[in-house]
Amino acid sequence: MPIIENSIQLENIFNIKNLIIYIIIINIVGFFIMLIDKKKAEKSKWRIQEKTLLLISVFGGSIGTLVGMYVFHHKTKKARFYIGMPLILIFQIITIIYILCK
Image (tube, rainbow, N blue to C red; front, side, top):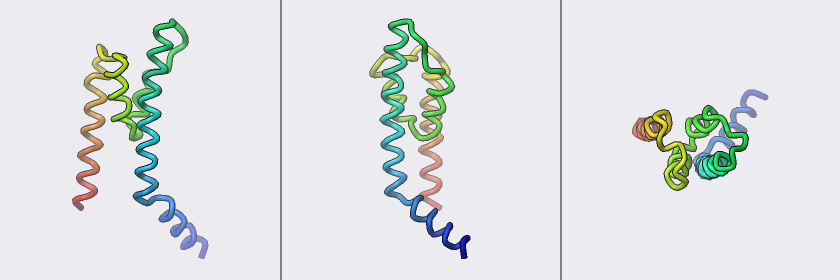
């Protein structure tokens, strides 16, 4: 019976409401992490690794990081970001459409 109980618990966690909450939170994090990194860059302080910025985007924060990138004019001259971020977002949109149309 524990396997069935665990399955029911997972169904309760992975629902559309929680997914939407997660997407909103990760995008807010992505937006503000771009602001934090920009402010640190202006003050020549320790910076957030580019890998971390990209991972936030990959894990669902692509809209927030992309918006933050252009609002704060941060990382807009690095190809990894001005090409990579939109590509990540496009891939995520295609994946969502594929899943919804299944």
